[in-house]
Image 1 (cartoon, rainbow, N blue to C red):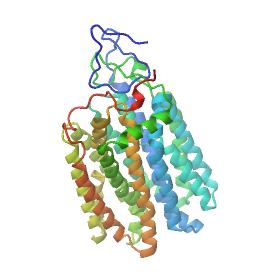
Image 2 (image 1 turned 135 degrees about the horizontal axis):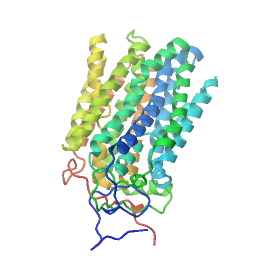
Image 3 (image 1 turned 120 degrees about the vertical axis):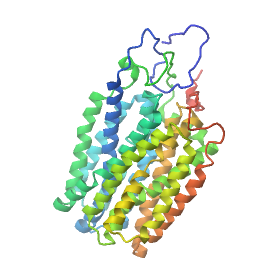
Image 4 (image 1 turned 30 degrees about the horizontal axis):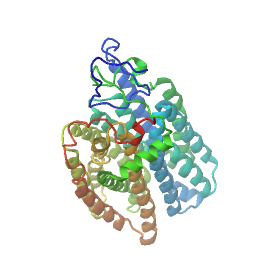
Length: 460
């Protein structure tokens, strides 16, 4: 039911999706803020994203062992990794809509179980199509629900203040998980064969699922709380009466008519092209071409993941304070220059360490300012779903890079042209970022959440 407030009805400018009920707490109903609840929500979400990202990065570890043990081609393994990355992004907007309709906890628990079971089934694979089915399709569908859209949905539901900082922390977990665990996974593959890292990631997902079901609250209202930083007269928006599929398509239909969506989509395409798809999938193979072993190369990736944790969290802090467009300009421009320089370095430990630190700080620092610009353009209710479509662009870019880099390496025997191409794409994205969000400054105050998403209005 709806509890009316005294005087004319008004909607606060910081409304965010919090509860499926069209109700809110008055000051007398409200319990004192309990920081440990918000910390628990962030921690469980962070760990889930960490595990999912580790799963998504595992094909990069398996590339050389599968080639040696089963005789599969590098291009074929890269193509399966690309399909998984593509589905990882494609599922995002639908999972965001499903989280609004069925709940975050149910969606997340089901996705973790799907990932754990599908990767576990791959232990008996002997043919490439089995690798495609388990790691390309099923794990791609599962990890798509445990991706950056999960972070965006949690942030918009649980936080009003410090959104950029929290989103930066959660976004960092996606790179930290994909990079920080790589040395351990590579060591397992090196000493015990390709099945050892598969067992590790499958077990991690199956253990994480019951923890999510047990520990993750669905809404702040379930604990008698308001979102962090929300005012006393905060009113959550009404739940959409439409199904998640309709909401996801309606959000896309609305977004396609906006110029800002295309700039956000294309710049995030470049983000995926230059991170997960190229460096995340092929960096170990790039190092192998220069005589560097799998375990040391994975160590450099882990270092990138560690520094990404600081870089992306700091980016979230900056996003709460500075113009998001100029932040994106800086991130994409520096990333492009570093990729152009990579094939011309000597690949000494010192050079790779410098590259790893620099690239790690910039790995997905683009996420918090991109979400801020999406919130500004589409409103807080529609933004998680629209952001899911923008993340789809990220994963299309990653899939293109994963597949194209494998093909160019097979044809040319070198990754040089691919790295220069990716670097030039980064420079173009830097210029595009300055054209996003013309009008009020999009990096300071969240826009009213009166969403432009058609699903916000209930049918008569």
